[in-house]
Length: 233
Image (tube, rainbow, N blue to C red; front, side, top):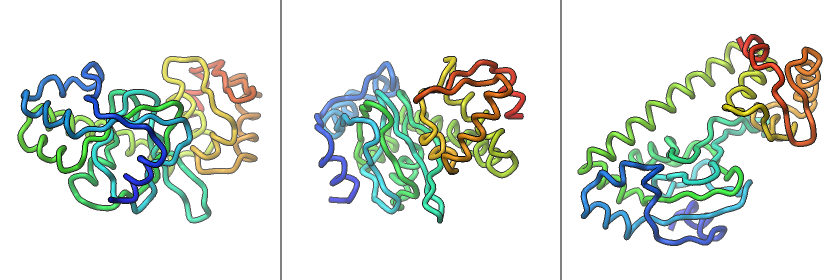
């Protein structure tokens, strides 16, 4: 049994169940024998926020389908600072885990739960079987991979060509989605952006002085989205 399975089973109560078809319509589109195969194999896990799930070098257990909360996928620099690559949220699957499921390579990053999280694991062997025989699984896989690829390309471009203030503004806009705030501490922002809390505090004061944000304990309110977009470039 691999390291990832040990980590998950040691930390979560789990039960056999099918993922929610409202979040993952492809499950309703596969054949009855494939659904029965999936029902026998998949396991749903529940966990609290901040729980380590996968470490770099682990052999992943299979495809991870998130139904509640989120999985945070991140890297660590040589200095030990973390930087968020992306979140896998309800209705999504981690593309690095999907890639490892097919390539049989070790996982290249770290994963932790973000908030109260539920996700279903489809064992790698079963997922590969379904992919080989079910068009709906193939379409879901290609859609997950292509959509996330553009997001990662944008992150690489931001990191390579933008200053930290622009990256901070872009991150706040992206993470807030349709809300007017982001519930993150300055320590958490520093982890996401792979920098120090002192730098985040200075950047936040600068954005606040421009009337773009207001920072309180554990929350950043977005006062001027257009202004933040201008800073983000």
